[in-house]
Amino acid sequence: MKRLSVATLHTRWAFTLCLLAAGAQLAAQNPGRTRPDFENDQVIINAPRPWPGVSDPGADIPKACASLPAADRARCGEAHNWHNHKLNRVMIYFFTGGEMLHYLDGFTEDLNWQAGQVMWSPASGFHYSGPSPTALFRNPPSNGATGLDIAIKKPGYPGKAGGTALDPLRVDPRDFKLEFENSQVRVLRLNLGPRQSVPMHEYTLDHLVVYFTDENVRRTSPEGKVEVARHQAFDFSWSGPSKQKVDNLSDKPLETVVVELKSIY
Image (tube, rainbow, N blue to C red):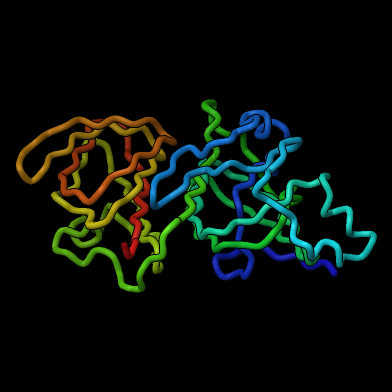
């Protein structure tokens, strides 16, 4: 049996950033990657994926494969890079694209995303990826960046993040917007105009900042300490709880996404 659905945040199947869907070009940009781009006790960013011709020792195929009809049993062989996602993830896309997911029970899912989109992806079962028949792919940036797959290691709590007088959404609701929030993360998006400023605000949680544009800002602490921070588009940085005023020193807009980790320990 074969079913087809378009992914939404409410679908029972998680989407993934297994970039096989982008074809041989993207696969060639990530040959034999064996380490994540970043990992600490709370997150894993862009964990290794099973690229064509590269084995994935951690992706043992379930014994359920043996029960498949003979005509379908080959799907469990080496012809496809089967894998699963044991952790919930935040997916941040830098370019427009899509992929087709194929699950063990024959369920297929056609996924499409837009550049700049941020989505929540629950843990999912064994599947492999292929090209989407409906996605409009655009070439990734010249530096090879394609997006961030942020796996969340620790459980969270059901309460809301923030809530202090200096919470970004309270201090500057014009420039900060809530993307989504659940028991593990709160995700904010900042769109700051050229030469504009964000008043003193604070992050009460450990957080990851992802840059969609180049950053050139001046940060001022409550004690008056000043530092200039610069990042290139598609970079990311990890920070603990902090307070700062931010001035955009650039003549261009600044866009970032902030992923706050709501860990219970």
